[in-house]
Image (cartoon, one colour):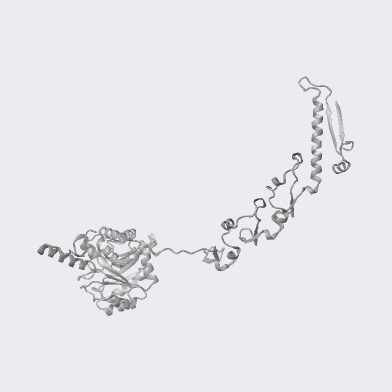
Length: 469
């Protein structure tokens, strides 16, 4: 076995400057005196020596290029990595000289362009995320040439000046989480929903709380009367219990109509045009105890009813303008109001609760005030004193309960004096219903046409333009 040592000190192929930069280096290998039977021919050792020499030449050439600083390009470093500059390695010597156009794909812009601040745009940074005052965007890619500004607008639709202008921001209250006093929203256009997109109950609530308007409602009792009221221009309608009982059952209002009768009729009328009209519906006594009342209220809510009134008569009730009415105790009455209020709150609905008392006929005006004030304190939205005995009494009730809204029920030929719309508005009433405004005229017109048909053989409607269309 023989050991061969080659030193760069004795290698005549190396320049003296390269020798000094590399330092003394030695390469050693051993030779095997004899070749095993399965080994390659004796000439393989010469090939291995030539391969080693070529590898040495490549290694020495690469080290020479690495030592040459002119092969490096200095670019600005990212300041948060703790270095001033980052040096990129030169191209691989084994690959020869590279095309600069290909290099542009790796370094699309020069160091001078990067250091030129005029090529950068400063935009406000999110200070609570990255902790910086500003973030600089890099200039356009030099290999791509000038960019179209219209495309850039898609990324930054508003200018830096607009972003920094606080008048473009809207301050909204923040939740009490202890982290922020307020939140600034980006410049935007505020679009409020159309009044017609709100529910009928929400629209009626808005009318009561955001205006001093007197809401005048004609009494309707079926689909035809409701359509006529809508056609002539009324926005809020009143579904009368007396009219519904007469229309559906052909009976007087003596507590005959059931909860299902009233819910079905209210549902039909309220949904004829729920986006433009609101329905106030009679709920009588609630049709039972607190549990039944709660179920009835929820059914009215699902029927799209905007408001309802519930009263203090006994279950075998009668029309408010008939004699012989009897009322329950104040405790029972308030239990009805409490049950109705709880049902509304559980459904998170805007349906308006109207507390009605019929105690004036039996117990007098002062008892009516006691009941209405208690109902108001329990959360009733509107009050209704049925059967005023004089105009003065009506005006007094409005003043005594102000600013709580009151509803006035006008029944021509009933027990109360006739009060006009102008008089009611001057007194301060907020809602005015005319329960028999549709039923009484319809009765008279239908009766006249039938009598003419019976006695004269004609109805008398020819020439009026009223027909199947």
